[in-house]
Length: 347
Picture 1 (cartoon, helix red, strand yellow):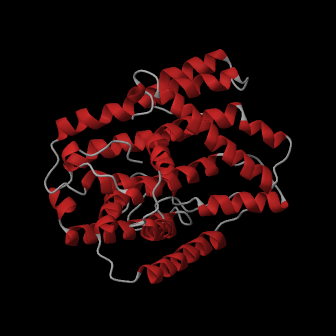
Picture 2 (cartoon, one colour):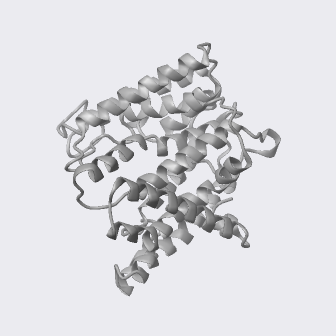
Picture 3 (tube, rainbow, N blue to C red):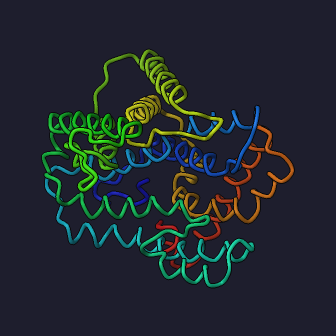
């Protein structure tokens, strides 16, 4: 989720990036607006379908970050200027929303004042446990920004190196997948040193390199054919996730690092890459996307979640998603007009 514009000298307005960001933002809100607890029948399977179809949400944000951040990077990154520019735009919102999500559970009667205080104090190093789980992504971004300057500039500039890295990253993802089913020693993974041979290629940075690679790749396949191929890839990925998951128990063993998630994310990226759909509404929502991400759980926890006390039907779930997204958009628009908004929504 790259909410930090590239340097002004290379800043561009890329319509399909706006569209992809909006789609990923909608996916996140839909995923987090689902009812909790045990459901049965159609209600449960509708929730499962939403979980299935929103798998690419975080990967797409990271791919956007990689493309925007690295597409004009042809050499090593100078750490100190890079950190000074980017880390405050993530760290300050993390602190602010850590406080918000520490006190909302107290305000709605979920926790006591001591728990709220404890959660607030720890929020810079641990996201608030009750409803602040979305802040995990900011910790991931901070880690990525800290590490990026130590990668070789060749990785950002040379297609052959990117292909090699992505290949090893996918192999690492297979290991992560296998470890969902067998926690014993796999390619070197003893209890006293839980690391496998590919561990240093796994993780979210792979999505940045994948976004960089797929964002600049020259595809000679006709667009309509490419769309059908990618839709097929999405269906195959969804089928794999479906058959190895259990919607009744809520067991979804595949993480964002799994090969089906990578495949689904790459296919969705290619479908929309180069798209010409653009409007001021899409651009505005794209600009607000970080704020929508940060604030949507406020709307859901305080307001829209209560609708599930009436019903958890597919229609109600869809209504809650729409109302949560609209509420978060309005709240972000208000925050955007306040002073120092870059410290609260990073924009």
